[in-house]
Amino acid sequence: MKILFDTRLIAIILSFLCATISSFVSLILKKYSGYGALNANLIRLTATSIFFIILSIPYIASPNVFIEVFPVLAWLIIAIIVGLAIGDTLYIKSLQYIEISRATAIASIYPLFIGFWGYFAGEDITIYRLTGIFMIIISIWLSTNFSFRKIPEKGVVYALATAIAWSIGIILVRLYIDDLNIIVANALRYPFVIPFMLIKYFLDKGDKNRIFNVSRRALGMLILSGGLTVVSNIMLVYSLQIAEASLVSPIVATQPIQTSILAYILMREKISLRVVISIILLTFGTIVLL
Image 1 (tube, rainbow, N blue to C red):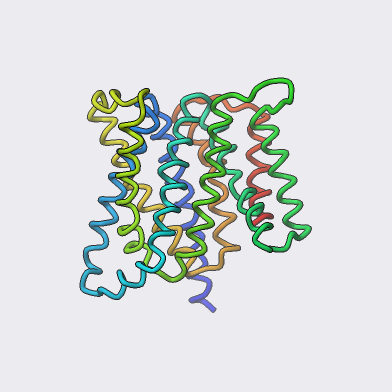
Image 2: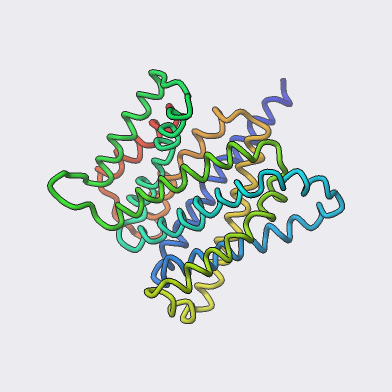
């Protein structure tokens, strides 16, 4: 009994730290989004890929761990391109136009879309899920200032697109990651993001030149954000391995709250009562939905 309690406690701590670290990553991306969403994400994901490759080196002695990933590698690559290469770039783009508390609140509605895709996949819609969906829809209305009388802000559109991309990426990972070694799986799939990002980089006409003007401090912080992404990813997967998702997911869902608090403390960002209510509804709606 004591071992079970200790395991659950470890999962709670890791889940909370995962949400906190992800919040710090959001703050870094907000601060340096001025260098261009594509550039910032390219630097961060390149760093993340390198870190995962380094961490996978000890597993070379166990080739079976790598072989297990190959049958589903194509799907995992698609997941990371949609979820991180496209989704995270859209998220950073939204940070260029609206406050981080609003962008995070809107982008974090991805569980709503996961539930939507799940319905078409044959999953049952329970009263609890309907309640969660309703709370998230109200949250969307509050955080986006939605009105049929006006065109939504660019940042809002980018944040909503982020939520859709994240939901697709997460669904694909859930379907195919199973019991694979997360470090090895990410070491094999992350490098495929780089060519995709480089193609987008050379096709992009807006922010291309800004990458040459990235300061050493900005470069260091974006690389740090890549390292923090690795840490939060490992913490999340490990916590899901030692505890049930019903315990871990609600704690991770507190990220928008933590991001808003940190943005207020560290960046002096004003948070309206409308956004605060939206974040609370989003958090509880996500907990009910998951």
